[in-house]
Length: 266
Image 1 (cartoon, rainbow, N blue to C red):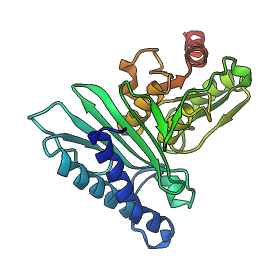
Image 2 (image 1 turned 60 degrees about the vertical axis):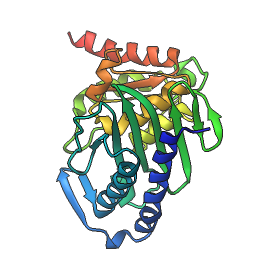
Image 3 (image 1 turned 180 degrees about the vertical axis):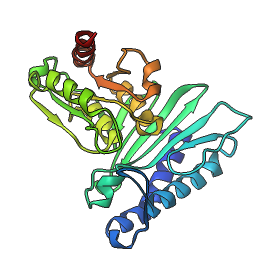
């Protein structure tokens, strides 16, 4: 059974998704602005975040809030915080692509305790609590068991205008694409990690992410039996926004491939 904390997070996501689904079907009515090149924020992002924050504040008024779209709320009375991305995959959302998700993580004393990733259009809820396993709706999920890159589907993010180092990425994908069964790009880091946790993808790597993109996914992957680190192979590097995930073997093989590129450059 989900804990009281997890239920609060789930209820906040579901409540905010009611209006979000309506917005998805009425995209022409949304107000859209940009934070930078190809970095969009919509009135739906802001509204969804406010609904989630309001719901969580009712249950945890003394917690801090780390959010993508508005000012953070910092509490001096506790080391507990929520990490929220109201729409991970805003560009997909704006194009009528259903691959976007609400991502909420709970961190206590610098340890991730719970995470949810909710896809409003497909009504798929991925969630996990520390030590309790990972789930998709009411079904337990586990990382894929494939141990050969040649049989694996790997998902990644592709740098675009205003984001990332395109030349580095080209070097990385050249190193990996000839070794794997396929490479995918979905446009939502949160869903990428959820799909790795559920075995739909075998591995994942990406650079330049923010903590709200990946916090919920980190605990879901771990609780599904997966390995997730930064590109240096440590958990510390995760908080720099660089991620590799998969089962232990796929993770380690991807990590070796990425490291090999930069060893060659040296």
